[in-house]
Amino acid sequence: MEKRLKKLKGKKLIAVMDDGEAFLGTLIDFDKDTLVLTEVCEGPSSQIEWSSLDDEEPQPEEGYGFVDWVCVNLEEVIIRVDHVSRLWPWKHRKEYFEDQSKKRTPTYTRTPALDMLAKQEEKEEE
Image 1 (cartoon, rainbow, N blue to C red):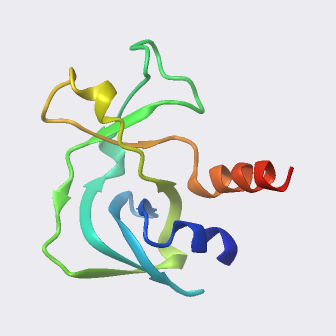
Image 2: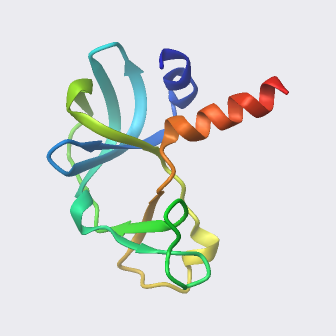
């Protein structure tokens, strides 16, 4: 796990908490108990509107979510790992979503970050 999180250090990710709140921020540090994010926005993961790139029904593993993020006026947010239910890398598809509503911001794909990193590691090892 530590090896995978090291690859996310300095990158934006989304931490979805067990109470449904989601935090979008840059991972600046972590240990076995905590994640430290900076430049943080907060939003409810329960209000995600899912859509797919081809405007059809989203597939179970592929799709993009939209959330109205609220910027948190904090320099850093420290998150207890035992309260995190999911982690996703931030993927902003600005070129695709330019024609979409300006009020909605693409948030993340449904593929969990650590699964994506595992796939990348497998490719690198080949």
